[in-house]
Length: 156
Image (cartoon, rainbow, N blue to C red; front, side, top):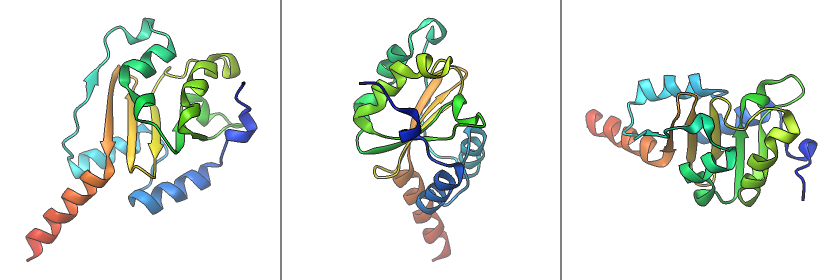
């Protein structure tokens, strides 16, 4: 079954609003995540993926383990999301592998050609693949919970 692109595209406005409501900061790309991480200084481990440039997109997905952890509704941002006629993708977790496998045929670009964000608002997680070949999962509940506890603790 092929992915039908118009059925999975959402507007940037819809994504930004949902992101702001769930995580409390503006995000449209990796730079926004980097600014947030610099401010919050979360304990996040980035893992290198050696030789990723020579790998198939589905291999990268498997190596990073993103598909294994993905369930429910996902919001996906790839390089193609910034093209005029596109935007973020909204898909069910079980369709992630399908989107990754078909991305090159659909858009003429690899899924992991540059930075990729996969957001699960229900799990409060952001899966990151950085164009330098490292990946991580941001557990926003832990990050924001820890920082809120620290802020509350200091004020008492």
